[in-house]
Amino acid sequence: MSSPTKHLSLFHRSRRLRRTASLRRMVQENQLSVNDLIYPVFVTEGEKQLEEIPSMPEIYRYSLDLLLKEIADAAGLGINAIALFPLIPTEKKDNQGKESYNRDGLVQRTVRAIKKEIPQITVITDVALDPFSIYGHDGIVKDGKILNDETVEVLVKMAVSQAEAGADMVAPSDMMDGRVGAIRKGLDAAGYFDTGILAYSAKYASAYYGPFRDALESAPQFGDKQTYQMNPANSKEAMKEVALDIAEGADIVMVKPALAYLDIIRRIKDYTNLPVAAYNVSGEYAMIKAAATRGWIDEKKVILETLTSMKRAGADLILTYFAKQVALILK
Ligand code: PBG
Image 1 (tube, rainbow, N blue to C red):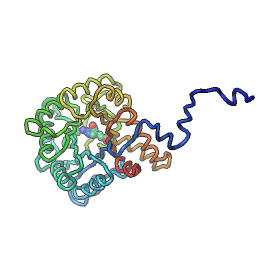
Image 2: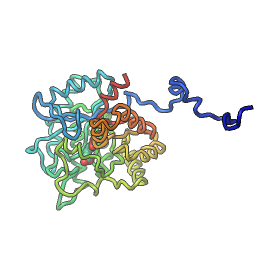
Image 3: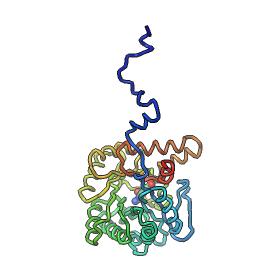
Image 4: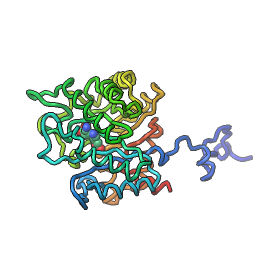
């Protein structure tokens, strides 16, 4: 007779389903797919410009000519969408962000060119003042404060001008109150009923945005963004923001950053039937790249594990600087 410790009488042995690769694949609950990826890209003025962002290895600011190649490349890998961010020359910045709705501004020219050359890719434009602001804030500044309603007026003009240039979706990342509703009304009034709104609904005042602000030279010139972006300690407040954005007409809601906020992604996913996006932000990218460069982690495996955690948390879509790398790995 065998000893009881040698053969435990267990009816349930979870390891049965982990025994072989095919069994593991059969019971896998979440799949990362290239369909879910949105690739954020940076555009700069000029021609043949390719500037690596020091805190974001392998991520560049592209002049339009080179950006078109990069986007064609991404589309070739099966990536469905890009999110566009501009580096605006200092002399075009002001407090009101007037350049943001210039018909021939960098964003507008870029969107037109992308939609002409690579029409199948979904173009999502950023709606916020910070790249255009001399203060690096997401709104108009007065006496050290960020004005809400005056800023929303500019955001509406910016969104309409992006739609006119051909943007498929506009993505307000500014966290001003009431902007989603105002943008929806503005787009409709201008006839852009089919231009969608990807709302940065739960956007936190996060230190993970540092490398992105290097990329756009858009760091706040005074103070921080805590009077409009959310306190990282809050989660009920995220639900309030999401409810408002849905009521105001958002098509997709987003949580940003992603990794330190997986619980928020899950709460929102359980709350709404709208698609939920997660932004795997610049600081999250930089941390993985930094450790991988030193040989401290297995880069590919950590990328896949990290993005899969966002899917598991409930993200339908993931904005990630790893988009091309992941598309290649998944191929
Ligand atoms: C600003 C904006 C930020 C990001 C996207 N849009 C930075 C900020 O709020 O200061 C961050 C993206 C990233 O870190 O990758 N409207």
